Image 1 (cartoon, rainbow, N blue to C red):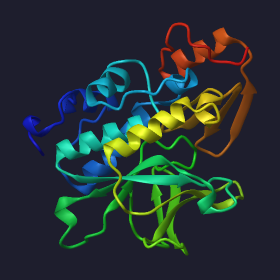
Image 2 (image 1 turned 120 degrees about the vertical axis):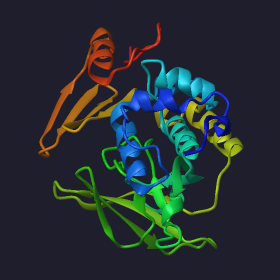
Image 3 (image 1 turned 180 degrees about the vertical axis):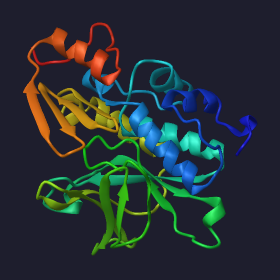
Length: 285
């Protein structure tokens, strides 16, 4: 594990691990990577309350700590995966930030911009015997999200915490191979594309620009309506606009409409563990 002096200013590993409930080892090995990833997914909710107000959230370590770790808040992909990257680097992993195209429902991979952040993680102890890096992602706001990281291996199924995923490589006109994360829909939908990415690294200034665009553009889906999700061992809970969807571990789905602002605020507090900012408007008027 890297010592505290190697942490980014403003990031505190102890506080982060307490927030996600991780009490396991602090080693740069696969078990720690998988455990911290799953604990983060279950410990910190996904939400777009800042973008709903057309405010780009800060990606500075100290601000992420204040909001996602010490505050009763969550965030979206840039916040979640920046925070996880800081934690993994503090533990001794090597992390590359990637930019992906969300392609759920897309006609083609090229039709979507690179607006999603994911991570490529190298496990130091495995590099000689098994040099594959792992795709990690705790910020994908969909039921097809990874709960545990998967190795960067094509055409192999991986089951993590009850969800089934695979990575495929597809034909692409660019110089770098195009990878696509797919999730298996046990309800009869089969394999469904989630997002597509190449392996060139993206840096902090790149995500500052993308973050600002997604949080302030009136055409961005995150500025249009409320989008909040939480994952537990028993269910996936999503509030999208006025529709609350609960997908249980057995595959059953329960949906209902949320029509009142007070009810939405109460749901965030009690079911998602989020205290909405004062004055935030959660539902359409």
